[in-house]
Length: 107
Image 1: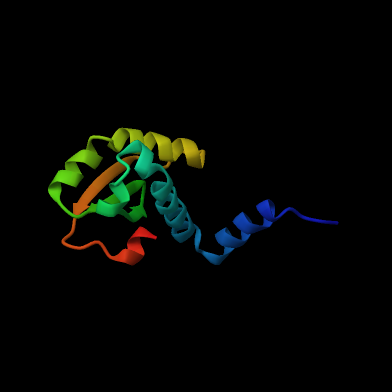
Image 2: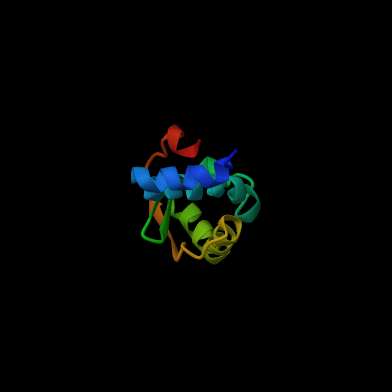
């Protein structure tokens, strides 16, 4: 008898205690997919997914101007992420201004 991986993987993640980490990684990966079309084609050159914790998704930006641009799209970002992930867990999108955005954060 075969068991679908789509059944095994979520159970394994839950048992290992990695659910929050896995969910955060998925949210951040989705941001990379939607940012160029939802915000601006150059959005990923000036921003990166930073954290997702307790329903709050934080995006870091390189300057306040990009922060304003992204915060103006915050509701669309939240709605699109929840739709793509088939959830209602993302409650808020926040912005954090940082001097430099680490290259690893963008990938």
